[in-house]
Image (cartoon, rainbow, N blue to C red; front, top):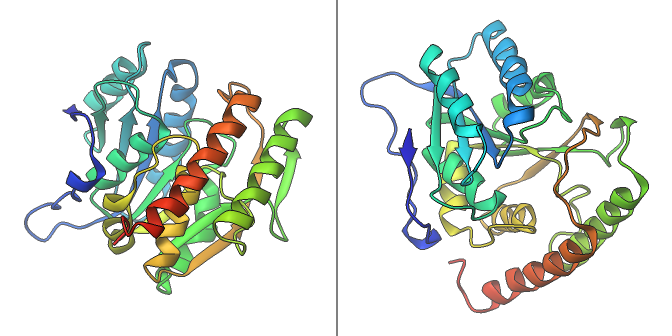
Length: 262
């Protein structure tokens, strides 16, 4: 297990990669905070998908200072499958911090981060692959572009929160993006190494910041329709998180005006 100290994004650097000629095609990064109850089925699904493919791969569990059995479960899996690695933040810093740590520790030429649930099936990556092979550098899942499907939608309060967040994000950050928060996004190694060391937002609006940085760096963003199912266990606290999201989106604009994303 790789232990990481408190993170200053200015000091983070991408993983130098493996020596020799070995190349990993796909890294699957799973940020996790107290996900002991949900992580087992996610491992099973991801491993089943990867084992059917031809690409070389790794799984990176990015633990955000969990206090339950998340790390123990992940290390047990890693002991049986050497292509699983665990990186651990010493304390809870936010999902964005865990994603950043995992993506910069990853070694793949394609680096997908996905939530520690099964709302978006791993098989949806089949839609990403042709775009990545053609040279796309940032490909994201969307629940709100034509062709998407939500057979098991969220409860109404969360749907309203999600719609409001997306509208504000579009108005404040990038209007052309239809879904900022779907936890299934892939970056090439080049895009990862150009974006994640600059990331400063570690909690609620980190997705919006990543896509803002991608656009600012000149990476085209492909939006792919997916089938998405609500899975119980959300940690969203609607009233508080709306306020925090607004604050962090304002910070993104402030950081940009101050030249902190150069």
